[in-house]
Length: 194
Ligand SMILES: [Zn+2]
Image 1 (cartoon, rainbow, N blue to C red):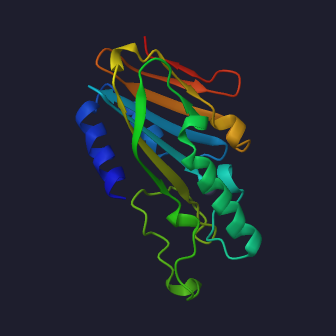
Image 2 (image 1 turned 60 degrees about the vertical axis):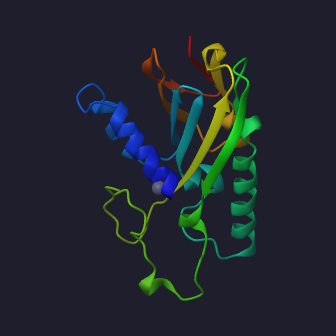
């Protein structure tokens, strides 16, 4: 959670409210089938943050209780940890420094039941009408250190193969020379950094 907060702060420093007004509302959106990816390259540090409706990754958005649900969550977590299968980073000599997979929204952390479940524990607000069917996101944050950041030509995003539930990824990226966004699909997986 701490890294996510930092990341948001970092973002707000980089993104002036005017120029990126549209994209920043994007960041808070929760649309099934759609995931959000933010890529920031600053000096040698490459931050990649994936925010996805849980349903895209495990097929549901409540706290896993059955054995099958729990194993789906574990499987998704394992896949998300395989950063080099999800993100191909050519030429930059990038090495993972840390990663944080936040699946807390779909993991049952207490044995107690529904009534006092902290449904609104997560900071971002959803604008959904039905109070009963809650939506939840999974957030994965990866930080790399790139020995040759200027040589990093692209980020190939291979989330679609790992998670068929992800149909589109709204990608936004910021480097020293670029501030851009694009919708990625299974047939269009490349963020061009140069
Ligand atoms: Zn949802």
